[in-house]
Image 1 (cartoon, rainbow, N blue to C red):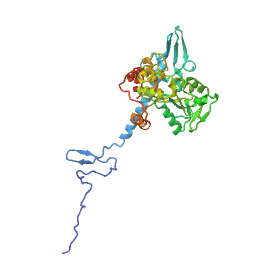
Image 2 (cartoon, rainbow, N blue to C red; image 1 turned 180 degrees about the horizontal axis):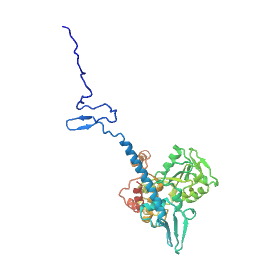
Image 3 (cartoon, helix red, strand yellow; image 1 turned 135 degrees about the vertical axis):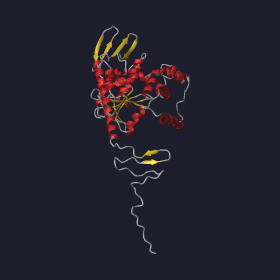
Image 4 (cartoon, rainbow, N blue to C red; image 1 turned 60 degrees about the vertical axis):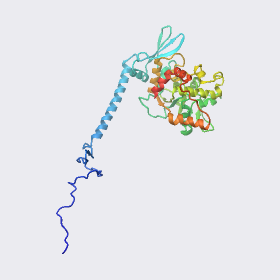
Length: 399
């Protein structure tokens, strides 16, 4: 008998009504915006593959977030301007006493917003003398009031941080034994920036009265100025270092004095590398022991315990240089000034302890036989803690 093919009236599979198999991941991609949810059937629950129909949900959410951020920034800026115009008590008082050094305080600035507006606006400084007479000096008078230099000549990070290399340059606040020297070396060797630091002290001795860009045997380009002490900073100001387009980076430990190098048109980007105050103090001691410059000062000090109790040990170095109170007694008001300057003016850098400090110290000890001994729990460490109580809180704030 002849074999005849079987004729079917409809196909074997009808994809429009076929159900997906169980426990099989669906690989098809939905192309229609209003496609019904396709679900995977399991023994316990069902999970949708396609999450929703509203294709305009993400754009609307992004638009809402953008409007919220813009409105918050506008409100903050308006609030700062309103406080600076409405509250006349946002002034800084500088009081002198017959037997004490000058101390700075922010009178009338009880909350953080008012202190922030004080550091971002041009107010007046009341100078109170022991006789009771008071004179008002504008912030524009750079010769008599130092706070104006710091407030006006360094860029405010919270307001704008746009790079303008033709008018502004980097100012690296040099904190001893914290990595600042490493930053300047990277900037000169790797990036090729022209420096204005203490490296020009050898050229200052020659007595050249004009600004020159020098180059040493290693290819480092630097200006013939010395920014490591106040007199050298005054000479740099006279040579218009802050307005010179050939200089890329200025570095100095004297934050307030260096502000005079800049002006209203040419400002500085303030950056700084921080290190734990106790570790920095210990590192400074062992550095001074190996340096021939401090042989006479450390002649009678044979241990770090003796150094911690001597007059050579630093006392809250960070807080004093930030608040411009190099001597005298510190108060919580000086700590508040230091924290506010960090918040508003400074771009903070912190070392990576695992990759930089611990590993590099281990390599130095292994290859060169040098290293700083640990003084955990010792009497010297406890004494250093007492000498750096303000700096410890300031370092935690910077973190």
